[in-house]
Image (cartoon, rainbow, N blue to C red; front, side, top):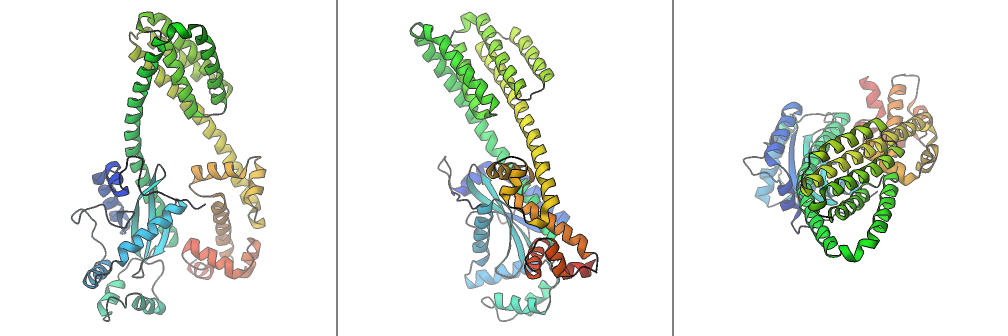
Length: 441
């Protein structure tokens, strides 16, 4: 599904400024240098306008072909490369996955989007390779694509002959690797900033809630019990729904209500805190959290509460216990999702030749198409239908190894309407036609 992305964020920074604030440039430089050393392919990080975030001294040295193209572009006042990076990055962001494209000069490159909090902040550009050995048409096409830069192609052709030829499978793997690395590093920076802000906000809200409840203690005393019981029911409900964010919000309000009694009633505060955690633990066990783990967490809490002598210490302790329970709930939910995903995969492997729809696949595991799409993409980093195509391609490779199968026959066995369409899908995924694949076996 296509998505629309903003190039700014809630802090009012440009995408470039926000990206530079989140990313550890030195760390990324070391990772990209190591990637290049291993693969021989250069990589760069650009902002949404296609400009590198690295200085000229820090940027990787590109292949001689690209150096020659860029020199020609500067002399002509043309900015084809930067523009193509911006466009490729936008396409990659729309689909939230690596996007393989052909640069204006004729080489294969790919764009891996960097997306944080709904914002497209930049793109990893990698490649400057070929996906098959150049034939006569390649040289004709290369000349046509670069005629705006020069009329003398002798030197350009000479350096083009030294370009690396990389298989479609390796191109896809390299794109996915850089996509995962960059997004995880940037997300770590983003989470660090937001965690700090969340702790500050939590402390502020806690102090504000305590003060408010102290001021209204006498007036609300008769209503306090009813308030707490209603919140307790709401907390149990959210735990059963695995709505972790709402669990946090309700829990913090309940803790603030307990702390409003003040540090002069510390024993009472400790008792009510432990009672609250016991309520949460029972609900957690009901949704599948291991009972032995729950007992261990509660025993540890009781011991630590006995050694706590301030509201601040108790708050830090109970917050850590809450996060432990929420992590156990999330792990159990992931385990259930994993079983569901394996069921989806099994159904697809048994029915790939029948071209099942997403609705039919979802019905096989008794879930909605929307939910199946979401958990499958989160777990496998590909859509359900992409996995269907992968299974078909894997089966095609097996049949291509047997010369008695004709291309049309293979296409029919896989559920494709004709051999031409099958060949197009195969080439898009493998970087070569079925015939070329068979000859390479």
